[in-house]
Length: 357
Image: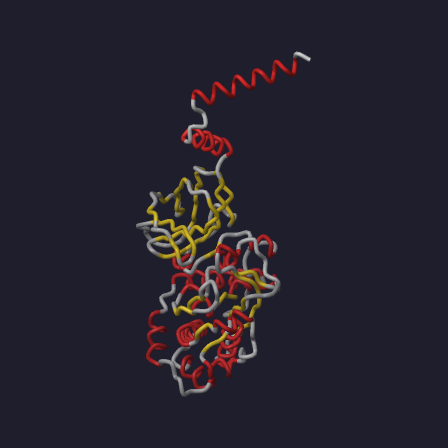
């Protein structure tokens, strides 16, 4: 019995390792050849996508790649949380859906391919302004897929996020395929998604919804980088002007050539700031001094890919503020010699008058 458990565990570990290293290009290329299949129904599409493959992993990948490339997020449905068109047949007809529609379609196609798959409801953060702002209701759905018998053989899939993203007003969808949301890195996924039912938190993750919303925002590029648990771990950084912040970002990716910091709002981003960094034990290390007093998002890019977002609250130090006031008064002539003498003389008169009675 012990030997059987050990074999099952090793198989699960091997699956996880292969999922991180897997080259899905042959599967993706074949799905591209199938195209949009605009005139086909759900059953025909599912059969076409999976019929050429033998392994469940390849079939699931084919389904993911097709959905992420040929179904769009529905801005209106997401903005109003309208789920009336989330039925898989309706999604195929409209070719757009909320995240729930994506997850139900993925689940149905997997079911037709004899792959065990479930839809999971929960929460995500998409913008740094959402840090510490817990929503009143569930705002996202994704999937878990089982390839074998052990707990290690459950995998995360988020075809909605893999398809692209909405702007902050949830009015415009931008198509941008991301491979990393398929059989996603579980540690990273848990920093990016929080299930309503914690039974579907497949690895260690935030202990509560409040803790989850206090974390930085994980961007799509983090999945390509193989990011682990970054520091600072708090998403909201309250700083004094000229404070130095040390960043530590463990990762499992390849050689890194550049790191940039970008500040500013969505449509008013400042020019990217290159920063010096070093790599130690597969961890990116760098620091930066924040001088601008304001509240603003901070975006971190690695080799041009967005990986992390923080929210900064930078306030001037009290002594620095006092010195600025004094300088301002001097510049206006407030402390001219004559004026200063008059003030001292009147102050002396006041003191003498108070103590002479």
